[in-house]
Length: 538
Image (tube, rainbow, N blue to C red; front, side, top):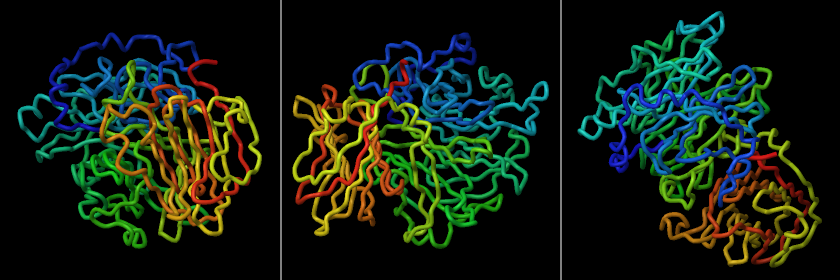
């Protein structure tokens, strides 16, 4: 979530009163599976995006009574950032989404910035009704008038609750529940969960250059417990959107705690990005695992995604134990250029939902990510790609039998013995524009190159000086699991150890798909191409 002072001119345009637009909450939901007008240029067809206007960070994600709830930072009056609301959508399958009316509007305490939401199963808050647990949202209020006046206590935390499955929300009468008594600038983005061992709610809160941990018995009264991060990780920008959760270590009986932390600016390839830490949590303090601490220090971070367009991501709370997954979603954007990308009716989309797992590797603990298997239900066509020895270009356009702009692709390559080949996938169109994502065996790195992907004049920061270089692979067989959706690419490689998310904007749709190899031959061992159905129409 970006709240830069550069936006205050926009911010002051509309400072909304408490009752402003409340009647808009009474409306009919709109389903992504119904007939819509979401066919504009660059509109993603299987990623979540708002029907119109501006969207950024995912907020308040939880699962309850068969529904995945997704809230998000939303400005309904423009396609650039402005007074923040919480937009709202629900899904039963993590792929098709029903748009619901705006959940939270700005009021006299401020705009509604990022936060989280939980199911208060034991009704610790007292908001429950008729024996059903209340749903409680915890969010940051941002007082734009105070910020413009030069005060530093312009952010504080509030709560709201719902007793009708999240369709309507009531703000707590005694907000804020965490006032800003120490004049802390950048005091925001609460992520809350119930900690069983200490029998309390825990809040991870971003405070400029570190994370503050707070505790509560009832979600209304909070105590500061500890701080983490001032001497660990990247600090070239403001820390935002923390998420703290336990994870089993795959293949062992151990459990570790993971802290996600977004930063803007300060990403490894420019602009915004998300780092993470692995350690232990005792109900009061988060401490780094000793082996993980050897890989991070001040201005040295471990990054969740090696692309430029996955930011402010957090995980769903209250996933049933029978499921047990740690489900993640990020904002598919970067504050270097998010407000000027060439879309008209709307701006921004979310990443694909992903399952996170924790592994112990030679480099200590690492988070792996894979697309959720629910996405397989979108496969409309399937085509097996024949093995081939590739030198130069192999055109697959006719072979795959579907649009490369709405495609899932799984390719297995065997790296050459001389380790010199540079190979990957190219999308292109008749105007000579192309996007490449591949692997440089000589350097041992994945990369993404959008330097020729279209008209780049909207931002000098978009293409960058160099293609993005991702983590080195140690595998001889390279599997590239790719999703292409109109104006985005997501790569999952090395079983999810390497993940890259990139957006691009060709002046006309990419309609050609090729595999290329430079500096030597590469063997395509096998491949599958799946044409994917749109979630916007059936």
